[in-house]
Image 1 (tube, rainbow, N blue to C red):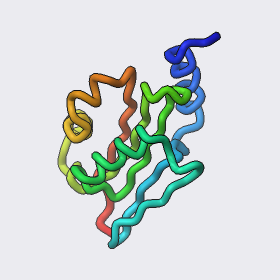
Image 2: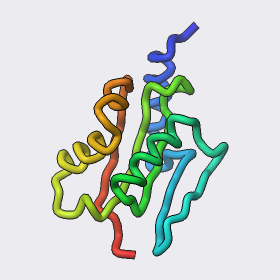
Image 3: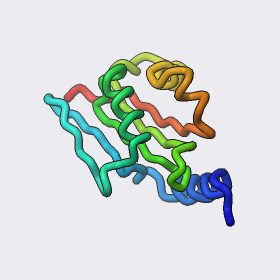
Image 4: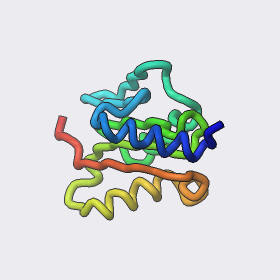
Length: 121
């Protein structure tokens, strides 16, 4: 039987090989904030992370995916926000970690973050 961490690594490799199509839970905004749930609507962990990021970073695009094989220990996040404009990638990632909170980030086995400056729409 495979452990959660072994399944996580296998799933991470599989997901990374087919990026950028990364998420069952996506939020896109064009004028008015609107949530679009893809697939099964995402896990509780995906919804919690997406809610924190929507609240604190006002994303124009947001995708959150549990890549742990279902145990909720690893997530992939793709987020675009105008708040990232003029910031280095390291600063953008720090903003994401800060929005999630130290307790949540420390509870995860792994976190993959892809950030961008957002659009003007």
